[in-house]
Image 1 (cartoon, one colour):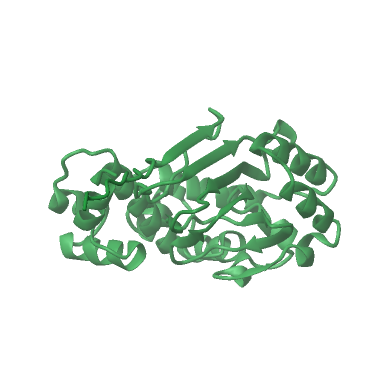
Image 2: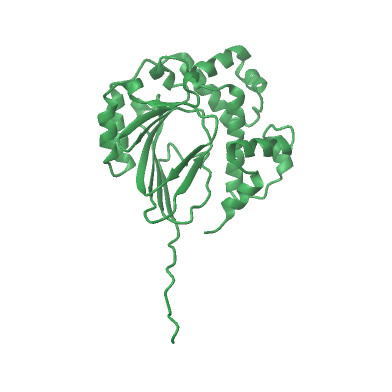
Length: 288
């Protein structure tokens, strides 16, 4: 009996597209483990000038995994609030202490609004720390008017169209700004920009503000303490360096990022990411 000759279907490699306005740049803190298959799109859009005091950017993640295994997308935490639209629903998320993990299944999209650090305090009308590690219905913050917006966004085709709908929604719903809101943003921006800030005491010296005052500003307007923000942004820097493919001196890098030694860096990284820096480096470099 002649042997049957069959054809082996080759799985198509993953297609990934990342687009962003120059004003907002590439997404930071994304754990870029290459997916084995499927189609992905990550878009980021800048808000118009009249909303830029409040909104940092609009973002969308779109995927098509029909007939394929699910894929887990992960992002390191930011000190930011998000208004998220998915499947006709709208939620508000405060600062999460752990990484954000989301299993992507089938074909769909998520649209989000990332607010500037400190800006959501005025919408919340209470301390930002009240929503730490919490997600609530957006109706509790913005009222029932946000529900029709969520349903319309669910049927939109791209991030630019969704962003324009969000622009229209917020133009007539902006609260009053205040100096403390801008101070909170400035303090966090300094932590991000100045790598020499490795401790809260460093921030106190550079800002010229008392430690208790800084802690109060962070509790009320950021939602987490300044030490947490410093640690998380230094881990963001580490993941960016790993993803660049550069050869790294782990011991020197640990000291440069403000860690007592390499072991403390590895433990902090593993607690958030779920693996050691070297293991993550291998995952990023893996070819599919």
